[in-house]
Amino acid sequence: MKNPALRNICIIAHVDHGKTTLVDHLLKQSGTFGAREHVAERAMDSMDLERERGITIQAKNASMVYGTTRINIVDTPGHSDFGGEVERILGMVDGAVLLVDGAEGPLPQTRFVLQKALEKGHKIILVVNKVDRPECLGGDRVKTIIDQTFNLFLDLNATDAQADFPIIYACAREGWCTENWEEVDDLIAKKKPGTLKPLFERILSTIEAPDAQLEGGFQLMVSNLSWSDYVGQLAVGRILQGKVRVNDKIQRRGVNEAGAPVTEKVTVSRLYTYQGMKQVEATELMAGDIGVVAGAERVEIGDTFAGDDNVKTLERIQIDPPTLAMIFSVNTSPFSGREGEAIQSRKLRERLLKEVRHNVALKFQETELPDQFRVFGRGELQFGILIEQMRREGFEFMVGKPQVLIKHENGQKVEPLERATLDLPEAFAGDITRLFQGRKGILASYEESGTQSGGSNPGKRVRLEFDIPTRGLLGMRSRFMTGTRGEGLFSSRLVGYVPWKGSIIHRANGALVSDREGMVTEYALLGLEDRGILFVEPGVDVYEGMVVGEFNKDNDLNVNAVREKKLTNIRAASAEVLVTLRGVRKMPLERCIEWIDDDEWIEITPENVRLRKKVLKGNLRGIVRHGQGE
View 1 (cartoon, rainbow, N blue to C red):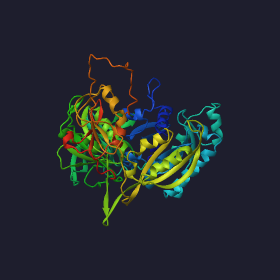
View 2: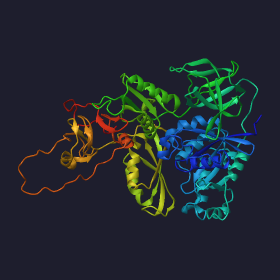
View 3: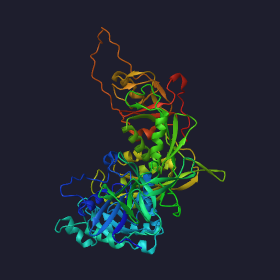
View 4: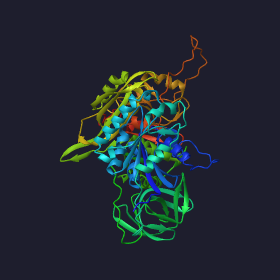
């Protein structure tokens, strides 16, 4: 039995292809927002970090009404580092809108999420976005993109029905779309009004209505979590069968910390459904709908809510395993507690466990040291987001260098391999190829991807694909952006495990390390400029063991960065001239994660990000670096 008054869909796209902007206009044009209601741009990007970075990090729900049909829509992340967000929400929907940039085409994260959707058997609607870009004029580039997308469907073993996807041409920024390419020029020139009505109609005709099996006990898979200061923990998911009312007695079936199954009784205290971006209270939820259930004190993603003993427990959400690990530690620096909350190990542990419960792509593990914890994840960006969130909450802590997870299979050492896809101006292709080959990358494909009229390098663009160990990608993103002068696109996806590729030099140079505590002076830095690249500016407080720069040799060097010029009453023979520093390299969090080595920490506080040695005392620490080829 189907419920024709419901549709559950998600939107799939690569980072910055216009996914969240399209959702904005869908909500507005469906009449979800009132005439006087203020709506911020990128309404689905509710986190501060999402707005600042222009990417979607957490999957979020919204709902709109078109005609007599309510459409539940989920905005999914486009970066594979947040793949756990993607995998757990695909079970909530019955179809997907695949959004592809009309100039860039399908990129690796498009492939990653699309593969998961096709495996679920979902039907797909292709929306070619940004058709107003200069590269799309004439339609030749758009035809190429459609061919690439069709080939991608074939590569992912799509069924005949899935490969016969409808095509819609859109400009999400302007809020219009059409199924007829001949109308695009008129819509761009505003000779005729445009709306998203063709997409609404196509959603209703292509995406199947959800099953509404009202017989049998209540069953829900918890796919997301939320929190209310009034009612506590909220479980978000799709009702697979039956119905539930406020005050019903139900069961929560989950697992404990050891992985053993547990069952507890729960009384439903509140029920909510979605109206636009808001949760509105409901008295009853029925099969096929996406809703929110309150009443369980403890709930985790992957749990099953069941109405009675006769309802079977659903298989827990399975996601691809993590490839990186990072140590989180209590802050032990001399400046601990100056700029934030110097948390104890118990509070750090609680915060990390809370994150793991909300994000199934992260795993938590105790270490042999009571004040250090190991977190497993997908990529550097995922760790960077978690660290930035904790920093903004006022915490002080330290993190170590990301470690690639190595396996042993049949007596052989194997490591994760990634397929890196690079889209860049042809003029930089040679330098970038050498850069990746130096990190054990093997060029898998080289093809032209169109032309660009803007930027500092107008002309042909090429798309390169490298098979490269995950170790080789650590720190590669910033080098790639520097090598392409900011005009390249970089993305990667895990393809499997391969035999160990040998040593890779992570960082060729050593560190300039402060040998005492004090305030950095310009006079001291002037004497250190020829020794390497400086990370700190005059006036910054430093302590013994803190990294103040990168040495231009392969060993570490202890330096005095706080030395002051001695004042005398003897005037120099020649007049002094004003001497200024050549410049200081800014080291934001992501760059620090890429730069540090095994014997270093990143100290995180609400106000500063510092680099330091694990052993602070210079007489206890050697200057010769080891493990450079790891």
